[in-house]
Image (tube, rainbow, N blue to C red; front, side):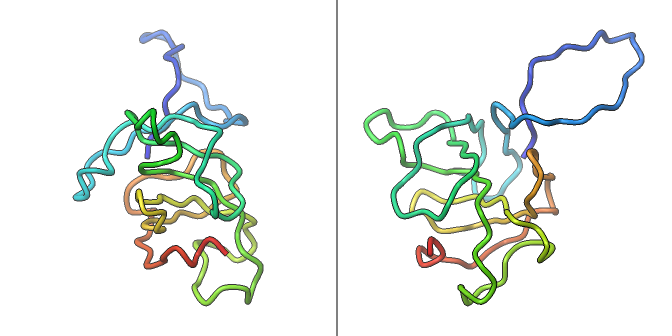
Length: 136
């Protein structure tokens, strides 16, 4: 995913490096062979019941106003306690969180190492084989 933020730079000015401290307002997913997953994701406060602890959640637009918790989600979630699940978490074991892309059935489809407010892009995401039991 790529982060969305208002453009604030001047085209001819020198660019400076900085740090992102606040969560993104949204993300863009493009180029996936899963066409339904591609699109703009915006930050939301409501998530489906039964999910594990979520720090940030982004839902793919447009989403069904009659079902404000449905659809594709990108979430930064709390990592489960070691030994509490049968599957391996994403990234370094010292990380306290992981980024997960959930499909509309709340299956965990892709994962990225956490403890960052903006996840990486492309091949840094790993394909997951976790079902609803991952909610813990």
